[in-house]
Length: 172
Image 1: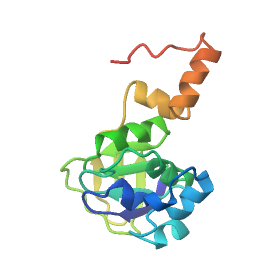
Image 2 (image 1 turned 30 degrees about the vertical axis):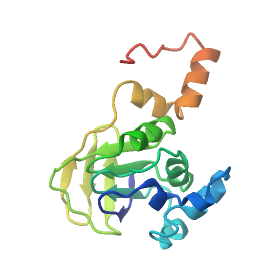
Image 3 (image 1 turned 90 degrees about the horizontal axis):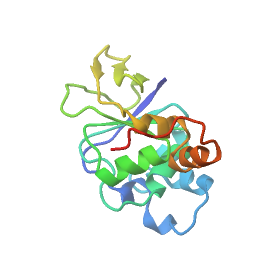
């Protein structure tokens, strides 16, 4: 998949991603309107399906509210590349069919607006603006099945409705 990069730094917390004052029980449309509302007000207005969030260390730290993930997903963003993720955000991303790719301390520089080609299966990220390519750590195992199944709720509901489907035997 190819998209424009939106670059963020380290320790972007869930309040930066989705401010709590828009919480409660927002619709997906409302969540999409308020993603990074205070932090980067232009984001929700200009992000397009296929764009890629690129971040530093500890992306999604703070609370474990799913609205942070759901708002990003509601904008049509399918992949987030970060040096590292907060554990709860990482899990929420998989549960809601958003693919996190960890690049750790690999040498990968990227500026806002760079065009990225991301292979979410292999974890290969190519900055088409510079030609720099890295191989991040994509999700694997049952996480892939959950994301490809549309998220945890849809995936496990499908397992109940269609038990003939492959069971999630690799849950560790």
